[in-house]
Each structure stands twice: as C-alpha cells, then as structure tokens.
Amino acid sequence: MRSAHRLAAAATAATAAVLVAAPSSVADEADVERYFDEVALELAEPGVWVDPDVADELDPEWESELDAAAADAPVDMRIAVVPAGKLDPRGEDEFVSADLLWEGEELASQLYDRVGVDGVYAVMTVADSSHDGRSFNAVQHSEEGPTYYVGDAVDQAVDCCAPSYGPMIERFIERASEIDRPLYVDVAPWTGGAAGVLGLWWGGTTLSNRRRRKAEEQRHLDVVRPMLNDEVIELSQRVSELPTTADIEQSKLSREVLDTVEKARHRLDAVAGDDDVQAVTSMLGSARYKLACLVALRQGKPIPEPTPPCFFDPRHGPSTQQRQWSPTDGAEREVPVCDECAGRLDTAQAPIARTAGERNYWEGGEDLVAYIEGYWTSDDNYWRFPHDDHGRARGDLWSRWESRRPRARLGRFSRSLGRGISSAMSQSGSGDDDGRGGFGGGFGGGRSRRRRSSFGGGSSRRSSRRSGGGRRF
Ligand SMILES: [Zn+2]
Image (cartoon, rainbow, N blue to C red; front, side):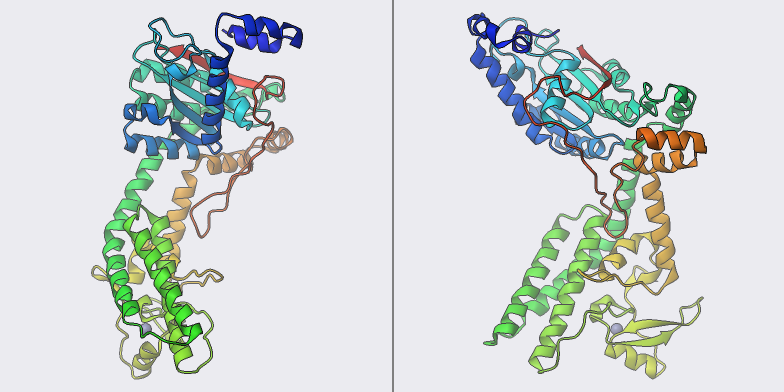
C-alpha cells in the first residue's frame, strides 16, 4: 500500500540518494506533503473541510450540515474532501491510472499524523472514476475511549451511496458515531458483553436528532423573528434621534449604544436559531441599559446599576423597582418593573404586557425561551425570570436537546452501569467526561483537546489504530 516514497523516508539517511534518483519526482511528492499539511490546518477543529476546487461536488447546504454533524459527533471527527489529483505526485493532468501518494486508510492516518489529535479521520478523494483515484478512506487512532465502527462505516458509505459524496459522508458520520467496543479492548477485554448493548442503544441518531432540533429552532424563529424585527427597528429609531452632545462621556455612551444596536441588527439578519435569538435580546437589553445610563448622565444623576428588564415588557427598559404581582394561576411573587408599570400596579391597573401572538410573552413556552434568556442575561449578570412557565419550558427544552447529545448520553449511561464497570471505565478513560462542555446559558459546549504530536507525519507517535478501511469506488 505504501508508496516508494514512504518506504524511502522510513529508511536511513544513507538511502537518501536513492530517493533523489528515484523515477518519481521528489519535488512533486513534497508538494503533496505540503498540500496535506494545509488540509490538516483547515481541520484543526473537528468537522468537514471541502477543498474549494471540488466544492461543486457538494451542495453548500449539505456541506454545512455535515460539518456541524461531524463537529457534534461523540468522537472527534475530521473529514477532508479533496481532489484525487492533488494526491498524485505526478500531478493532476496525467492520462494514466491515478497513483496516490498514500492509499486506503493510510491516507487518513497521514491526516491524523498532521493534526496530532486522537479521533476519527476520513479522506474522500474526488475524481471521475475509481481509475482516476476516487476513494473513501478512514481510520480511528485513539489511546483512550471507545472504539467506533469506522471500517464498517466506510463500507456502508460506499455500499449505500457511492458515488454521491454528500450521502456517503452522512452515512459515514452516522455509522462511525456508533460504538463497537465501549473501551479499548486490550485494556478491558471482559467488557465485550456491554458492547452489544451500547451499540444497540446508541442507535446512530446523531443526524436525525440534529434535524429535529433544527426544525424546532425554526419554529421558534417563526414566532420570535417578527418581535425582534420590531424591537430592532424601534431601537434604531430611538438611537438615531439621540441629540448630539459636546460631553465626552455622553458621546462615548451614544456611540456604544449605536454599536450595540448595529451588532444586534446584523446578528438578527443572519439569525438561524436559539443561540442567535439569545444573543440578539442580550444585546438589545444592553442597549436599553446604556440608554438609561445616558438619560441619567444628562440629568446629572448617578449611573444606575444593571438590572433585569421590566418584567411586563422588556421594551420598557431596565427595571427600577420591585412590585408584588400574581399571575393568573399562580402565587404572588415579586417582579422587577419600570416606573410606569409600578405606577399602574400601584393604582390597581394591569400593566400592558408584551405579547407573543395572542399570549403574554412569558406564556410563550419553548418558543420564547431564548428570547427571555437573552434579556435576563447581561455581560456580568444572570437574573432569574420570575415566572415558572419559562423555567419549565427551558428545562424541557434544554434537557431534551442535551439528551440528544450523544456525548452526554454516554456519560449518563456509563454512570448508570454497575460499579465494577464504571471503575474500570474511569481507570481506562472511557471518555465519558472527556470534553463535555457546559450547557447553561449559551448552547455551546467546550471540548478538551489533547495535542499529541506536532505536524510532520511518521508513524512512530501514532496512537493505537482502532478501526479503519478504505475503498475506491
Ligand atoms: Zn414596564
């Protein structure tokens, strides 16, 4: 499988002359090596990277979906889609059978060598035919954690979907997210019995879950987007009407408000889901607070402390006081309010509440979770929203979404296993805690990374090969 170059490189310096004299051009092999170094840089983070020269082969929609799916996979997964011609040291325009510098799973291992992080690596080489070097190759190298069905995933991808690159990669990600053996078997051979259970339970649902969540977030947007549009327009209007001032502090604050509203507007233009909604309302809340500071400065009053927005309508700006209030079916509680709402409550009038459709916004359920979370979070503060419906909706939503994150599911599952297994798992590093990010506030999750080796290839520092395979098609 290995090319003459690899063998020569593995030999001692004494044979370097042979390499120079070899029929294939050394400079061209170096080109391939350099190209692969660049591919590795593009895949510093898990995901899918498509060489721009073959971008036409993959619908951009597919590409971003697959990229996100690979990044969300339970194991760090890096997939490169590259033209086969760039891996042939003789160049792309040869009218002969393609002869790639590396073939099969070694191709994927070369990518792993360059990135230097344990995980699953796959390389799709794009060409017109198998003769031209069209192939799909993948491997898992890991010292710790479960073994995934990587070799089988290559077979399934080719068998189901070749030569359609998008569907092939989709099938690969699904299958390669399933655990073959929960632990590295050489460390704990007796856990074979658990493997079947885990494999079955795992179920390969990563992608369909992502789709479902995306559809849910889309429904939230249908409700929230018009509300946000109105709010951004209204705030932009107010900002444009701010008087010019010679006061340095005031003009600085005016500029900040303007910047914040602009940022919110841009984020709203590109809004794609709950993360964006939360970011937008957080910025709108911040802009309103700064406007309140500006008013205080103008009146020669002290700058107010940041507070949560008026409970009845965040558009009223930061709250200035607390009042007792009872929802329709709930106990009396203290809510933060603006001056005007306080006045209404004091005179037994109902404050005019922000609505979402026909409902008060706090009865908007899951649709409004991100909207409220953003408003009730500032750079330095997180305030508790005083209505239980929101807390319940948020709990439902986040636990459902979190339970769909395979890494989190593995964590729960392994904790529920018997003591014997879990202690062995922790000794050998089951990976269940590895890289689990927080979930509160933002929906993101941190990932821990272990950089093992620097760029430059060579197999001496490779972690154990777990599973892999490669096929031309
Ligand atoms: Zn109010």
